Amino acid sequence: MARKRKRVIGGYRFARFAGQPQPELVEAGAAQVVTIGLAPAGTAPVRPLVEQGEFVSAGQIIARDDETVGNPVLASVNGTVEDILKRGGSGPAVVIRSDGTDSCRPLAGYSAEWNNLSSDVLEKLMYLSGASGCVAGGIPTRFNSAAIGPEEVEHILLQIVPAEVFNPSISVLLEGRDVGQVAEGLAILAKIMPRAALHLVGGRKQKLLLSQTRQACLQIGLDRVHHHTLEAKYPNHREEVLVPAVLGKEFPHGYSAINLGVVILDLQALLQLRDAVAAGKPAIDRIVALAGSGFTKRPHLRLRIGTPLEQVLDQYLDRSRELRIVGNSLLTGDTLEHTAQTVDALMSALIAVPEEKQGPPLPFSRPGFRSDSYSRTFIANFVPFTKTVDTNIHGEHRPCIACTFCDNVCPVGILPHLLHRYVQRGVIDETLVRYRIFDCIDCNLCTYLCTSKIPLAQLMRKGKDSLKAEGLDPRGRTVHRLQLKGFGEEEA
Image (cartoon, rainbow, N blue to C red; front, side):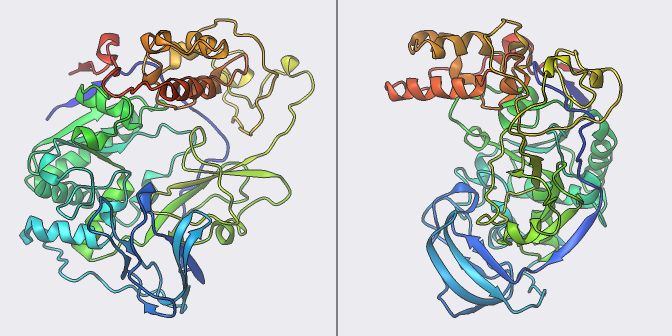
């Protein structure tokens, strides 16, 4: 089908930031000891199937619970179960000491001629490989791997919009591959979910890749593929923005895409499920991009799930500076305590930024050669200098000047400059609902751009939590009304 260019309200383009991941892939191999969480992707913990002292093989299922929605947990290395933690640093986990070998036994029943396999076998391979758990919410199969079944999926979105400050390299993810394998992954999903339309969504720089992928899909007989282009603005890659923009669907507060019959996955997850079905490879590793000026080198690392971050970061961190480590997203990612955290099935980037406790003297007098600014008052906005980022807000909190920059960039069209005033004054009533505070998607963009250094996103969360504490159930009471703003319009 014809390519469609989508227009989305708000958002912000991050450009020319120092510390981008380098287009290099390093095979890290198996760690000496891995700690594999038993609550994958934030789901409820699953029951361990192994005992302390037992030998396990890479790719073997070590925890599984078919009675609840979730996915199995696999051993990522060959070795001996050293411990089963009921309350690890990040929850229950299995600790495995590797025997030093990198081998991994293939899945039984896989086939390079996957099109000859039944949908039942395809689903079983995806589930038993762990690939169905490589996206938030899971990929639907008949094995209870997601909140809905495959027959309930209406749309599948492959999302490759580079909207974050730091984005993993698409060329690295495709290293040694061609677009035919991307098309195979889509075709496998299409066979499992026969009612679903398929959508390729990328930025303008991904037009050629999207076009080539669609052509590869047509060559293998997959013709229900739509081709969309979004601006590479933050947070256009988020499900709350993608679903209304690409599909024209409302996105109620408190829901996820899977609740709406939509499966959204990135390129790495798609290739993992393709490899499970066509190559018999269990999803036991992740390609993780190192980003930010806190690293001395910033390659992409192929890491086994459960690898301690401390072991990884010790090789690449700049130890002369105090650093903060953030997972996946600079604006919304969690701060990671790398002495306790391990690589999980959703990790795609590790970001190291300097901890700056105090900004430079007389910040108002500095020309901003390396600073980002929405107001275009810094030199870096006019001369192509590389911008830097750290943890300092670079200025004291000041009263709101009603510049409405936060309103201009809000991806859901609400008014943070107005809403935060009510919360600050303790006005927690229907006024907040009327101004659609529950439509906030917690992208933190308003805080990032605030010229008065007001923690707008924090105040919005406080307002929502206060309303919920008073008994207001936001579900069904308020939804994104983005179509009124031109959201979801398309051009041929």
